[in-house]
Length: 173
Figure 1 (cartoon, helix red, strand yellow):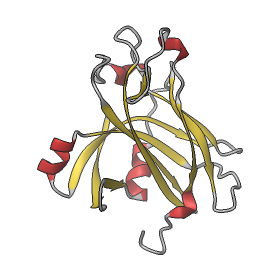
Figure 2 (cartoon, rainbow, N blue to C red):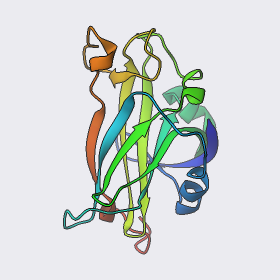
Figure 3 (spheres, rainbow, N blue to C red):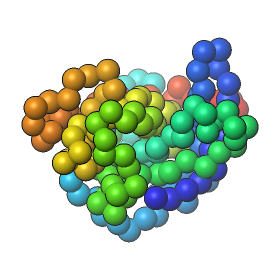
């Protein structure tokens, strides 16, 4: 897993994490080509809904609430997958086999993932809680509030459309 500092901002009811463009760029240089199940997929778009090609997309494993509170404003997160959006804005995030050993495999364990997208147009993130679909299917996750499928291979990845113009670099957000 690639570790990098993660800065958080406190929202009224939740923690929102922001990673700088420089850290995203540095984290997207790994050479471990991921194979296996898709954990998340989606499309990166601009404010008009047009595809954003070449956006950097990271999947990070967030620390537990207790770890967040103990750490203060900056904490290290683990990048477990990365991709670049294609010409049509689409991306797939797969956790490399070498990273799967460090992830929980107990179906009762809940983990928090967050997708970070960085593009010249701006940035966006999306977080959700998941759990392993089966101890026998490393790297296959389902939303924490969903029933795991009888066949882990049938687990549906999280699918999102992320507008990177929601947060731009020139307005400080």
